[in-house]
Length: 483
Ligand SMILES: Nc1ncnc2c1ncn2[C@@H]1O[C@H](COP(=O)(O)OP(=O)(O)O)[C@@H](O)[C@H]1O
Ligand SMILES: [Mg+2]
Image 1 (cartoon, protein in one colour):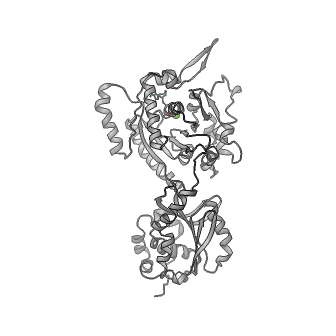
Image 2: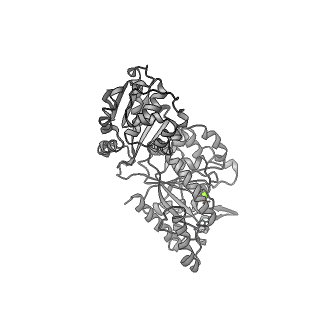
Image 3: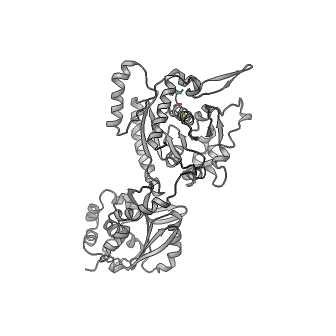
């Protein structure tokens, strides 16, 4: 049967249509596509590039190879290259990456040879594992391995159906993972430093304010530091509470402001300047000291400007890679919002802690948190990063009344699990005067009261509050695999 196309191809911008159930929708909209994809399909009948994309690739090839619409992204731009399709195998490799396949469609009258150099350069630059390029008449599959790209299969369009199992053996959803999981074990891009430790990047986020995010970040940083970890804290909140708690705001008037010209904004803004090591300060919040990238109230005025530059979203990620030998743990403090800075933190992080006082507003906020994270995970998939791993909701600022702790708290925790679908951490941080007093600590110098914030572990090392943060540090280290 020769396929004819009385209906126009679906517009590409409607690719979301395929998300629910490709087959059902294609039956409804394009009955003949369904018949074609089930029985026989000759891509040589495609009349233009968009038919190669929609009829050949979306409706026939990708489903035949076992991919569902959730596994591919259309018209993706990465590092200034635009790809027709980025197909990501949903099965996580041991290297914590996903197998990646780039599919490029060309017009039937285009000679593929003219596109090969560019295509193979793309494969290398985004570290795809395989690439498929086709104009409908010819299909070529490339493999990218050990920094080299080689042509491993060429077939005529009309032979696609006969050779589909051969193609599947190379780039089928399951097969692609098996074929590369062995090699990636040896040559993965990793965050392992010469000290043999892998840098762990953890975001602390909830879109509700006042739930103890900042308190968690700074005291957890102190507890990890005391356990011998090299810690970097990044403050992404324009309220700069972490920067304050870290003792970096010592100046009394704006003229002495030594942060406004060198803080997280500059890290995000500039590609080739303001690396982590250029912006970092030492915090005397605890001993041993940890490092901090400060924030500043001016950060809020820069959001629009930074949001217009796509690369700001991945800049922390890229710059952290350069500092991976220096730190064991990076903690990112976030604003209580769904804004760019929260996004940037979640993109950069491998793990997430969600502090919550478990009260109704905080719980309702969890719905936003979940949706926000899912959207960012989709982006992380596109850039080849695995989804953020949620370590759990951390009960924080919890009342200490005995009856409350015994009867009400367990139910509140159960709600988070059952109604909102989040894991809970084992640790609990209770509301204790000592914790806030430690951060509000100050020194009297002459007539002046100079802020001298301290971690609870330094302020009252034997307190029960200090023990809670030590336990939290132990739990976090176990969860992220630090020995
Ligand atoms: N465990 C705690 N015990 C006592 N006070 C706390 C505790 N956690 C946070 N606080 C206080 O609650 C307020 C909000 O906490 P913060 O950590 O700044 O929340 P967020 O960063 O989520 O806005 C601060 O004044 C802080 O000192
Ligand atoms: Mg805060």
